[in-house]
Amino acid sequence: MKSIKQLFIALLTAVVLPAAAQKTINEGKLVFEISYPNSDIPDQQMAMMPTEMVMYIKKDKSRMEMSMGMGMTTVVITDNKARVATTLMDVMGNKIATKSTEADIEKQSAEQGNFKVQVTDETKTIAGYTCKKAVVTDSEGETSDIYFCEDIKMEGENWAQKQFKDIKGFPLMYTMKQRGMNMQMTATKISAEKVDDSKFAIPADYKEMTQEEMRKMFGGR
Image 1 (cartoon, one colour):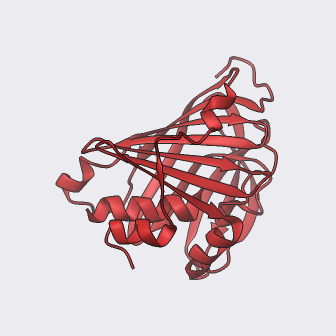
Image 2 (cartoon, rainbow, N blue to C red):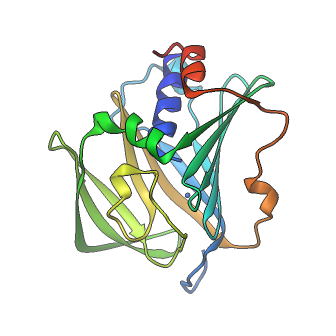
Image 3 (tube, rainbow, N blue to C red):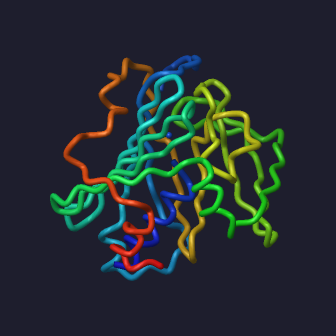
C-alpha cells in the first residue's frame, strides 16, 4: 500500500493536464505518459502504478484521470475560479470524495518550501506544441526541468501546483517528486475538442470524507 499512499499524497500536493499546425486551445483533451525515472520502486508495487494520465480542460476547470492496479481509479476535478480541487477515488467499488481548498493545499505543500523559477531560451516540441523550458529549484537546491506551452490556456491555471505558480503557461512535461518517488508526466496527444460540463460534476454516489479521514484510510497521519 505504500505506493498508493505516495501517489495519493502526490496528487493532493500537486493538484489539483496534435495538430500539424500549432493553435491556441482552451478546451480539449490531453493524454500524458507517466514514467518513474530514478525511483526505487519494487516490481510488485510498480505493477500497480499508473502509466497514463488523461486530462480534460475547459475554461477555468480541469479533470485528471488515472487508473491503478487492484481496480483503483483516481480523478481530480479542479475549479480554478472557486480554488477547490476534489479528489475522487474508486477502490474496488468503494467510492470516496475529498475536497481541498487553496488553504488546504498551501498547508499540505508547506514542507516543500519555496521554489525558484528560471525560464530559459531553450524550447522543445511536445505532442506537436512548442514549449519553453523552465528550471525550477526547490528549497534544498534540487532542480527539475519543466516544459510549458503558452498556447494552451486555462483561467486561473497553476494555483494548485506550488512549483508551477510562477510559470505562465501549461506544463506539458514535468516531474513531481514525493518522498523518494519521481513521477514524470509527458504529454503524448493534445486535441482541441468539446468537453461536456458533466466531466466536472461531482457524482452523487461518492461518499465525502475529510482529508484526515482519507489519510487514516491509507495509513497516513
